[in-house]
Length: 413
Image (tube, rainbow, N blue to C red; front, side):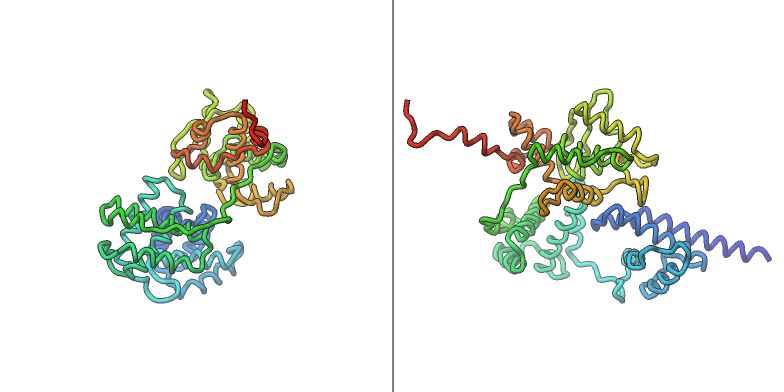
């Protein structure tokens, strides 16, 4: 008489184990490839684990969940003590799971795969492994490449000999009608990157790459304003470092202002990247940058040591900077870093239009240039392959340049 409950318990455990194995593995990779933030991936995984346990109690597997069962399941989870904090997010997680399993959340079966989809998959692997671009950058690169392929070939196989420069001009003009010149140029740059990849594969001539136009943007381009020395000191003082969170934020702002790191590089730092004996920092490779080793100034090293000793929570994660409140012990994400900098700008009373992290990297390069560093040295510290990229970061001091202007008329010796 005990065999039947044992069989039911075995089936329940088997259904649960299979789903819990896929969620942190294939499903999380699926979300990362689509540009989801790490915090969202963790949140979705938590909701899916709760759903998997609820279905396993009824001897059902999460793998068999259909789109029609999503809303009743969300209502059932929400009625339990400790249910999902957001029904909307829980519903989005389950719908994304259904899409991952091959069913369209809007009803019906999944859309058939286009004949040119293999180009998008190979292009994404190229951007990831060869170019080292971040998931967010790869996301919009894939989006624009997909729009181009759909416009050229609909859902059929990509036949590149049929694509002409005229077709590229026509697509660029139609697609950019509703965009500002700066946004249109971002799309066109992405299109040129994709066609360059196709040319490297030997599928299209180089003429198609050069056929991508560039829209004039006169009077629109503005250089990022670097922080003055007073603003720099004010921002450093905006993080007192009294508690664990303050110690973390103070260490982060020093990495951005004193080392010129990218936001993604700061978010990707691991505890093992700091060489305390040689007092240097191994910067993670992101965005196709060169691997580089930076000298660690003594005051920055002391700030990092204070955070590790007194502020970093205990966690099995290798990431250097971790969360302290919600999802404590999880890696501190790039989106959280942006919010932290935005709040610091507001506390310091900086202009309301200042929101980004990259302003601090510009300030680092400009400060080096004013202290006599040449562009090649600045490029090495920033991790640039091309000196032309460094030119956009270096801002000359106009007050100093005015002293070099000769009076009019010129005095001949």
